[in-house]
Length: 459
Image 1 (cartoon, rainbow, N blue to C red):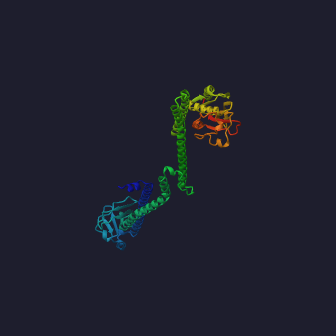
Image 2 (image 1 turned 90 degrees about the horizontal axis):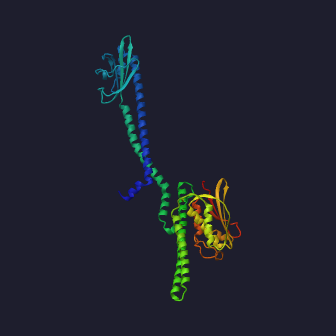
Image 3 (image 1 turned 60 degrees about the vertical axis):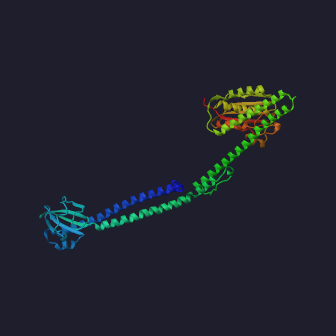
């Protein structure tokens, strides 16, 4: 079987058409069988009524007494057989075609008719419907039996079967064709969407599939597909920017290291200790940058839930403050730090506090202030961490990009070039993965205040 044929057989269009045709054929066959059964029952009942009327007519003229030969003569023929016989089997009267035959029915019970279809009447090779009635009077008991040929009834049923045998397949084929056309017409926009998306390359992610605006399932599929393409386009753009920025950031320290080595080699009287210190500083910056890049790569690759355990966020804050005080040239105020319990990864949350603290120390004029407390907002218990510096602050334009990766603020706001431009982006990523949020307090003046909100843990 060719690939095209296999593709057709596996298609939704073929499966829907085959299922619809099978169901319709099943329904039509069932309906046809029911129609045949009802028709046969009606014809049989009509024939039984006719036989009962003829038996009543024979009994009314009392043919058993031999006074109605003309009646039997009128009933005679290949289609009708009449016999009147005693209970011992002796024939009392009969139509000409049954006078020499054995009795055609057994003796029925008193007061009841015996009705059955027999095939043993030796007149024609047809079935006969027989109705026999027991008559009892002063002359004794006798049986009046009338039989009618069922050939006409069987012919009607044969014609009906033939008609159904032609109509059911034809109706099934016509319906299958209609379903095939309708499903194909319905799925045509889906196939158009598939072809559009299949032809997209990495550089074509800004392309969008057409939306009909009908609001049906196909239109919602197109809207969803465009939303996915938009997300992919944004992700690809972020990846391109990330690679470009990472390449630039990695090249800068390497270039400075290479320059320092070249200068030291070109000048025999160069200060080797100064060169060593410069190289160590660049290696430290490079290590911090690589560490940040690896964290972002792992975070982007695994967006699942973080490992959590109950911890005291105030303990983490105070531990990180001790480290900051050892190397910071500013005052660090922790009077507003109170107890707060959260559920999370201690290493990840420690990195949030460290990144916010390093950022504040780099830009503070004299003081960095930490604050931490719990609050109940609209029935939700939250832990609120604030890190504030008294530096030049953040402009409105800078506030829109400050959490972007490799974001750079005005050089006048920085005390040194120790930042990688990834600290705030990493901090926000960690906080959001913990179910919280990290924002810049745009109303705070002077300086900058960063606010971390995390759900309070279960104690």
